[in-house]
Image (cartoon, rainbow over all chains, first blue to last red; front, side, top):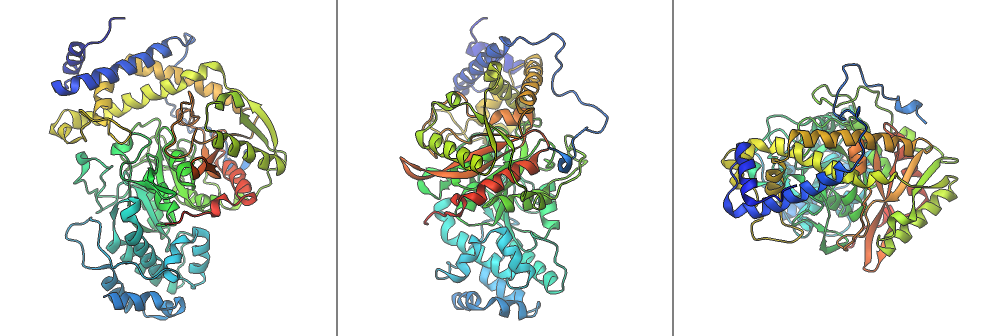
Length: 71
Length: 516
């Protein structure tokens, strides 16, 4: 993967409608690099092809175990 | 005015309740000073009365105070007055409050007193002074989330938690400190009552410090990566992160919609159960709120833990934790074993080691979406600046949400796909267990730790309930609280509370208070 640069950060931000002042670019770049390292770790996880994201929702009422009758 | 206050605090409890409801407002108003010019400001009150007497009232637990209030032996006005006086005396050193709503609190206390005098007692929170983290919307009271971005924000409505606490008769004393927008485990300006040179932790640091300093009887906090349990452990009080969806998040400044949990914080497990019973329950205004009956948490506390299967984090996993933390944790495990629990060592699947990473990506992507409303306007300039600054108290919110804005939707959803695996892993780990024990924090307050896993954010990622209860004090450095985390499968909040209560009843860590 190409190493992120200040220019890349500036371009990505602009594409997102954000303007990051020059004096903040170094800080944002460093944080973005940390996030990308985390993503690289996550990419090592063998995800089964059929795995859906955990945010999909159901329109049926949650099948929660009534707490008082739980274990 | 000082003489009036002296008389006020000398007045007996019985005398208070014999006073006519009409006579009380004038007295109390004089005691709390002039009305504020703005709807919300820290209000000045007379300096505290002499030690003892009224000053001891804030040290009561909710259970103790409710017992006296229900029998008309303690007046909500007297209790609120004492709490406000203690805040005046101590909070300049502790820094737990962002806003003290003294006038509103006294008015609510007078209303509570009149109701109770007329026989309309609402339950164990009636007349009890509480505080909420300053992310909770409070009608007519400024809600800042500790950020200049929201410094003038006065909500037009109460969040569900505040709405429910008020309906239960609680007295809202004020809004509690946190780091900017709840980001991080360090609350700037909020000192640990056990050692005022150290921080109270976070992000619900104000809630933890206020309870430890007995400036309140109950509080609430928010927990996205451990922010209730961290300050609970750090300040030696009890804090519960309930199962996701049990407590409504409606009307609370968020970090992350799928990770944020709100929950009770208190001096004891029983008080925590009382608070949870009031604030839990379905709320159609929160899209993640669960439609399930609210258990009678206080009633369910007194269950035997005989034969309960308690997992213990493998010692290798906490090898790098502070020696005092490890010692206190292992001693706590022995206590529970002595109460009849079956202890077994537990290891998590290796792939859980990247669960914290998934939690971090989800957290920042959702935060970036929320913060976009500020980042694309001039409000962006009002974030606390971190340019050229370093150290634990420096807010990195703007930098984090700007960098988070650069991540893609595909990356966010990839983290959410990984989350599904981790939830499955957690269910598998808990399947043969009733609950799991771990240290809440790797080290006591302000003591550096280099532990690779901290055993808090996984419970946010997967929505499982977890509580922190005091389980000891450090010896090096001396006198800092240590917490035990007890967690269980989703919707086993009552069981978590029952195990914590059994532990608490067998120990006396929760009875200790800092010398202030």
